[in-house]
Image 1 (cartoon, one colour):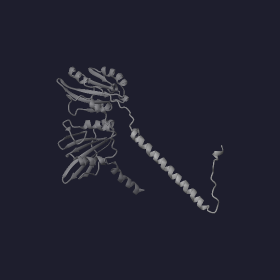
Image 2 (image 1 turned 30 degrees about the vertical axis):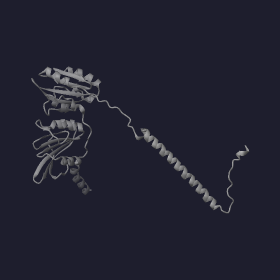
Image 3 (image 1 turned 180 degrees about the vertical axis):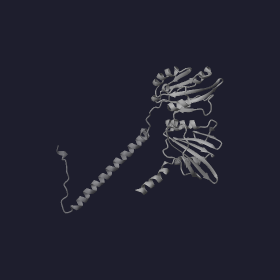
Image 4 (image 1 turned 90 degrees about the horizontal axis):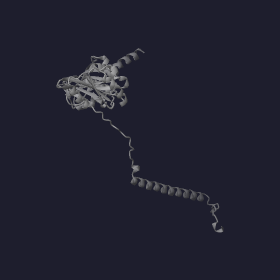
Length: 322
């Protein structure tokens, strides 16, 4: 029993590992737990596990930190939060930013941070294949509603609950946002001629809920709010009201309507239908011929077995007598 317990304890660290032992030619040399600041915000985003590992190969080395979140939405929110202010977009992935010897990548429900090295595409693919419990659900479309003009680079923040709202736009009370309705928000900072301002776009499950909540947003001191479908865009006390008005005008909800359509099959084509009819007719004719030959062969065999007996009389209907 002691041996079994010791074996179990020995296996626990390996089972809890987030990162693989090797990435391409690089091999892991050390592992540690990354410092997690703002634990309440990480919990709200759904942090499940995190790990920092050092890798080396032929004198080259780098560190890799991985955060595994509950779902892809929480990982996207953490990615926007952890993204350095001076980083630029990278071609390494659809969601990736880079700086000198630095790369931050969003992959499903994982956020991966490379320091000291920018991996090659093949090395990234090998890393993706080694990750466990990857969630590849689609990301929320709310991120695409922030206007692009005058947006401060890397200022976007995704809000899934009251902790993130208080951190990134503290002027809006969580009770006004009403997250219990399932609301989420995208926040961004914008540069106006008279100073920076913050735009928050809240998304609600239905238009009716948004219609009810916009009255609460308009009660906030100095608030400028606009509703578009299930979206509510809010700017608090803008230094340039005219700029804020133009910014709000750029927030437009675009509904996407999908319709279930029947997918045509080969049997809907009249040519294929005629071919199928001929094939089925040929099968029936062939079956009839085979059945007739089999029946005749059986009768011939039975007659041969009765060579000394009288032949079976022929059954006649005597129709000429009617």
